[in-house]
Image 1 (cartoon, protein in one colour):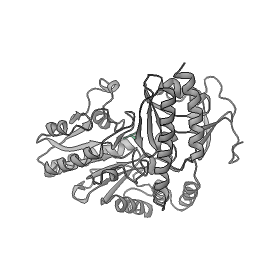
Image 2: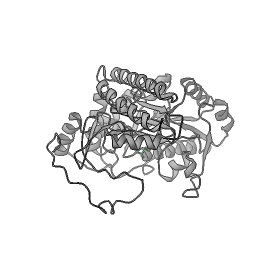
Image 3: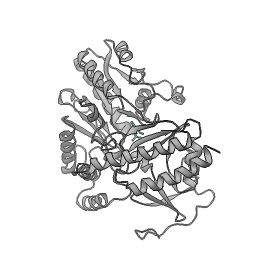
Image 4: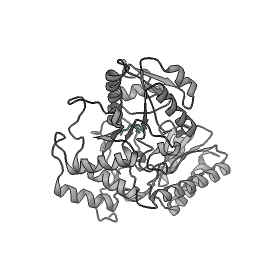
Length: 403
Ligand SMILES: Cc1ncc(COP(=O)(O)O)c(C=O)c1O
């Protein structure tokens, strides 16, 4: 039994996964329950979760705030139609606009869908106000999702030849290279789009200076600045939005992952001057769904409670300090990132082996690159849980790195 009283199923039989489309090398573990920083598998084994759905479960697994709002909202209204307003859609849009300093919000279901919306909005704006400009400058190693347009906006070497032909109109430049951005701007350029921290690439930050310079450059050229805050938004970096660190406001931000705290919810948030969709240009059956929007409100309310983000900053520093000590001990490299989005450079291509052995020992960490581990715990993670994680990782690094 889990602590919530759910009966666990037995060990999965051979062939038990056959009906699940085989799109990833999943380990033969079946998770059946979660609570806070912990997951439980079908054999009753517990795992300390420093992946949290890829930086999704802002308040941990099955937090009381989300359980309560889901039950209450499900009894009240699950769905009407995106062709009508609903109270939760209005509340969440209002919260996001107010906290971001932007003005209008389109709610969606996934990060890729929000980014696809941002690309469409920029192109619509370019079509109306910039002589049909449509090109978007994105960053080498950026990640924006898995629809055709967002894959085209992304840069993954293994995607180069996949699903050809790509969607046209994306020009890539190196991160933190302002002169490369400037050189790439042409009369066709409508926007620059980037992540404040490149998460999938292995946690590489756009510097605050680059963000500020980019804001000036985009203003000077009258083009839009779009920030993909799908991984960095909603407190992950210690501020509600990643862009706050640089003290600038973009024209468009996109949010997903942490916004829903575990349920599929995303948002496209834009300055009023950019909001130029006409009726029929944008939409989606589940967009603005009241059940999901109510959860988004609960997450924002929790993260904006006094002291919450200060605790994220403290936990992030505690995690970074612990990782630096492990790095020194095991001859690894730098600790990258901000808040509770961190990476450890292992200096050798052993990250998948480390993640595998860690899982066998009851710890979930992610290996976004062959040489780096990524840490994305719940924003509510305790110092004690960070210590437990470091303790397991210490043993695993000792066994794999020194091997
Ligand atoms: C920065 C960023 N943008 C977009 C996405 C795509 O989000 P989703 O998987 O919800 O479509 C991700 C997912 O990892 C991401 O990290």
